[in-house]
Length: 334
Ligand SMILES: [Zn+2]
Ligand SMILES: [Zn+2]
Image (cartoon, rainbow, N blue to C red; front, side, top):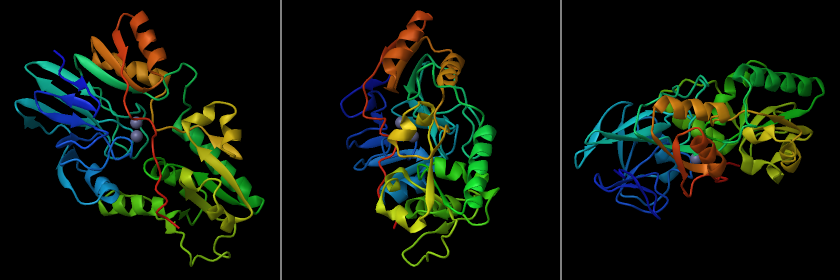
């Protein structure tokens, strides 16, 4: 049974009459997480996890939201829908869809390792699994978070010794919160860009405990920012906004930093290979744990991953979606 169809508006469950992460306006959308490529404007109702709701409100404004807990069931025309932790960012969920004994799971974005802030990925058994493949190449193998955090901490300490500010580039939702503990371990004050401040305030108001940060505003003085430690979103990288930190050095936190040349292309002085997505082995172990007989592979290295799965005897095919531009940052900070 084709419980979920691939349409020009997004993943569609015809029996239940709902879309999952649609990229066009639809009456009823089930949302995996609050990143801008998965959660878009214009839909009638948004069903999402309780922790995703305030983030959607921040980014999409007031809409008709239905928020549920993990493992809580919602029925749509007899189709059972439930959300399960995806481990990608706070609130990120896999969507489990069940009808007449047939189970499909849509992964959204996910990672299988525990980052300490996003509820850890829960393998969900299903007949058909729709998986992302952002880092679906065998070259992507992540080191442990503690190793990367140590690298970030040492880099900041070295910069302090040399009297330069440390500017860490991280997505405002997810990565920026994830690195806070590593940064807090080596500095008293953590300065953040307005976009990161907004996400931080929203999460703290939703009851998430995060280290304290300070917002950079037009009033923030040059003296305050001397030898500062700053977290800024990718949109601020290479922009005049950075001038206030002079002299400064830039460190980019991204899975893409594993590939030589990306550091140079991003004008980064340092690259930290930290990703909120599963690496190659993470994808394979997650897919295996679902027990799915059939896999659809979305955004990323679809052809490589689906070919590999087919060789291993798992029926897999590629699906085109509009996901992948992880975060189009709105520069709503200063
Ligand atoms: Zn995402
Ligand atoms: Zn994605």
